[in-house]
Image (cartoon, rainbow over all chains, first blue to last red; front, top):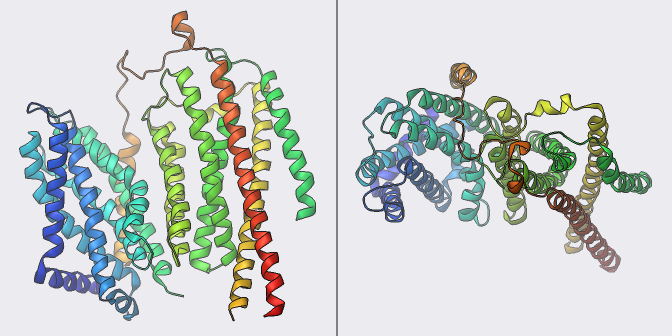
Length: 224
Length: 218
Length: 92
């Protein structure tokens, strides 16, 4: 755990110097929402459930972008190999990277929610606890798989295309659960039983994905 | 292997040639009628899609944790067959649904998760083909995640109310249907084994060719 | 690491029962996509079954034959290459 914490602090320190990834990712997420708002809002009214769908699409897209950028930085300076050579637990490196991703996506989501509320007249304050729980569980599910695949893709050819190609089929269940759960609480009358069901499903996916990722990170990142 | 292969291939061809006749002789289903007979091809392909996904996932795990090159070849062969049999499942399903439900496609749990499984293994093939050096491990991880999806697909119809018939329907078939069904399952299983062996052979020859190339370079 | 795994197991234990206990709401009659037995449909709305059946079976055969053929082609191509390589190797 200490190693994971150290990696998170290292990434945060690098990022604080330029703030490149945070700014570009948040801006990208905001432009995603704008594009969808232009496409889907007619005469001030959006399609039902559009807010939830766009929130998650923006999270998934900007998450992919953020993952790519974070690991591109490691590749550029060839520091991932150094991390791997460090005498520490490999899974701890993974956990550190995952924590960094979660922080980044939390910032993105904090910026997205007001935008969604503004453009789609979504009642995001109706049941904030469920909304936060769904977002947290969904983000963990998405980021856990994303971090694993982005770390592996560092050495692969055409990694920019392959990351979404690999990531989206695996994480579609997470996105579906997130969208349906969020849509349930953004309705005029929030349906908390429905939200609880989808949140439980998300936790279940989180468990499967995090376990699988921790289990496979070690052999996957070992160079022959 | 080649000696057993030819007679088995003949047997598979005979089974497949006989299959339409066997299916035609099976008793008609009361509510769905003729179109129910698609079931005899649809379900065996779906079964083999799952089997193949599990084979691919297990072999990938063996490759990742034991570094066995043979397991990697098996995984790559099985991964391709998931896509082939998945294509049959996803093509025959809508043809049945159009008649039975009135729609080609419905976003229910079973259909969605089968499509996802197929997508994952299509992505698996893409990584293998275009991932460049070192992509075997990446593909292995993909197959593991794909295999984790199989139980979800299998139980999805039993947990959620969906349009798709439950998996328990196989156990409640009437005798005439049951024999026709298992006939088709064995025909598909034999064909699957043969295709897997053939695909594996291709992969082995490819490894040999690569070794020859390396020898030539030196 | 152990603590993390423990937390994961706990999460699974919590989420499992919720998933099991959840019962879907009964379907509203007449929602689109609901299953209607063929027999209760008016005659005019029934589709002929035979074309679907034939199309499905033809598709299965087409896919399998195409795949076998592609396998066959790949194998023969590889064997040709290997023969070629084998011829070049003794010289080198």
